[in-house]
Image 1 (spheres, rainbow, N blue to C red):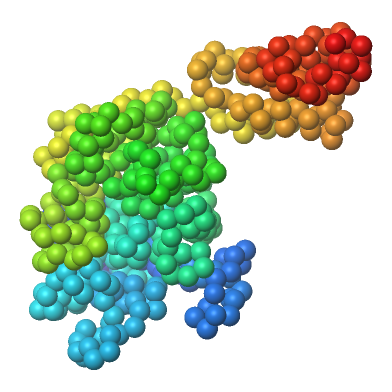
Image 2 (image 1 turned 180 degrees about the vertical axis):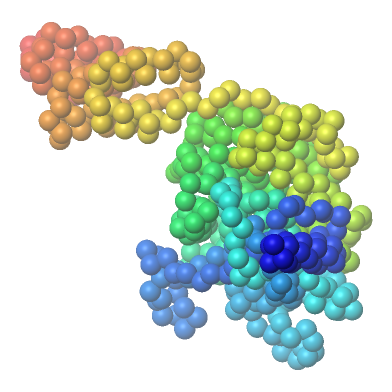
Length: 511
């Protein structure tokens, strides 16, 4: 009995220790940590499917990816990490060098916002301050949701979101991210290639998180700041396993001047069917409304959506720098500091937890709070809530069913039911069905099923000359000449320039 009481007392003392250390971290401001201690790991891995030039210009064997992971941990007697450890990791991320002739202190190269945004005197007060995280702490037991975070342009280091990451981990989330680095060099370009590179880096991080014991079957959410929000949106569009997406001041409401993310080949708004929360500067939303622009919120039909206007004109206020007492204007990052940005960022962090609690943990209280505009912070000037319909099945689900089971009664009933429930949605693309039909017709030896697939395509796309042409080809292949001729003629009605239909009908003497 004494040994049990001793163990309980130790457990309580460790929790008290964690609580005290957390409240000594001013970078956390007034945020109250959740019920879990916070562990942190930095893992260096190589994506061997890609290469990245080394500093000497020689190709490496793989693209080096430094995976930052925050996670719910068991209480520990280890010392909490100090803020300067994150600074050192930032320097290591990008091989930053000390400036020539610089003073001895600080001993670590600083990212520009810290170097120019605060005095050396104030930086000294932050330097050794403990954060909430304990490096390599033992994981807490449980099946915790996973969150993958995409970093932003000019805010490439995970330092930019460390407060949010620690806070989420304390609330029962495993958070993974990596620095934002360009495809061939550190510089990140606003083009499709570098956007795809960030998406693949985020996918790599997710792949590693899935190997962890608590990540194998965990639900998944995506967070993206700035460019990371563009990548996160495309990530969510092409990964049906993503259950919720949160974007931080990312240029996705209307078309960005760069054309991103819309120019990415995986961008498909018909596949953006999950709950979404978007924080952005109030001035942007107001400008879009004044110009009468149609936004992503307007176009999105499935999954509840929340767009929250924050009373700030600083992009940096959506990052951890808002919590670090920035004192000076930093060109390229933010203008003169007009008010303390920490309270608004704290509310962004709290609302982020509410959103993911509602969507990934199915917390009913969080779901009610999320839909109640009266529950939101005064720092949010406009809250737009759009209830979306339940998301439709993904096209891949239907195609897999047709491939594996054929167009039997079960498949037909499932498709008919879906078309009844979602009559105005794009459950199928014409090209996908057409391509499947030709595989059945010529390459898989399932000619009769090809006709069924092409008939479905004609039904869904009755104004497509190509759909009728393909159906005619399949029928002719089966010897059903009259039906084939009928469909070729329909194709010609829709497109009199369809040379294939003309040639076939002339060969049959039916022109």
